[in-house]
Length: 407
Image (cartoon, rainbow, N blue to C red; front, side, top):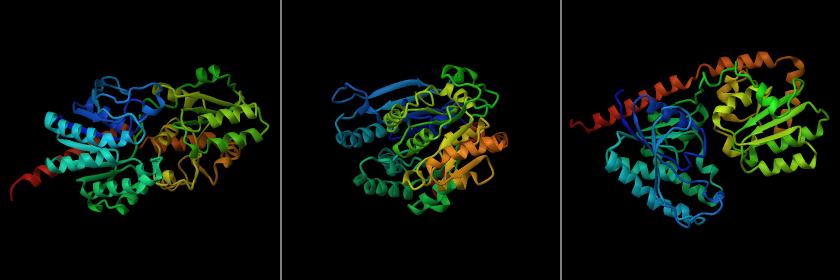
């Protein structure tokens, strides 16, 4: 497909959050010669200490977070930095910016990865007869902290889904969900998560990481990475670890978030400084080495947490590509995606993960499960997923062009 102009909108921070599906796809598309502009939102402004009352519009050129040579133009509209007024002000700044980008750069296609910005982008796209794709990688309204906003967010999602030219979902469970929320079955399809097979290569060594954090060859390392939500199940895993008198059983956690302080408290309370290792956030290029340093990877989220019901985190593919077995709670989306014999082992509760890990180690099944995990992940390289995405974009543009032709 010849180079096209793509405008992507999202309700989160492009620079500080992720990598998410859109980072991989958009940066890879830019490497293939497409012109990409992203409108994002300074989601983490409340955590950044001293700040101005109102932020000014910012433009970041030549943004490349994960792939050398990628060239993304990032536009961040200004907002009023006061609780709740940030959302209200973003309605006006988003709408103004989207209209400006449509007039200034004339995108061939618009893609939405959010709620508010995506609704505004959909309306602008329809007004300008521009193809619009709504891409779901999560049930976003469930992530809004203020629950009274959930019905409003669902209404916006419903309206956007009904009027999108195409709707993409990252897995089967999420596809069923968006159809139930109003997406047309004929215009809805799956574009799965991918994996950088070359970057996440099981030949990567974790020796340096283990040495740095004082991990010996005798240690059994359980690993988790990503944003530390309260429902991530890590507090339960850490508490269960404290009940097991095995100095060689360790928990290595890479990431930051809401549960970080609680994990620190558990570590201090039970004197587990040598057994619970909290690294904070680490550069993406170091992640394969951290996974390589582990024995078993974890996704122990609360199985009844609504936010986790329909999603499949990209970290699952990254764990599996590194030839590591994964212990996960029985999350419907994850179980539907990976089944029972692809290197993922399921437990009923987060606190069961530790005992299951010990069982796998003692049974000698780690290597066999790791091989199955790698074999599954190899089916979904980012290269092939990006090619598929590119074809979907081309199809959406051609369909819109055909609509414009007088009959």
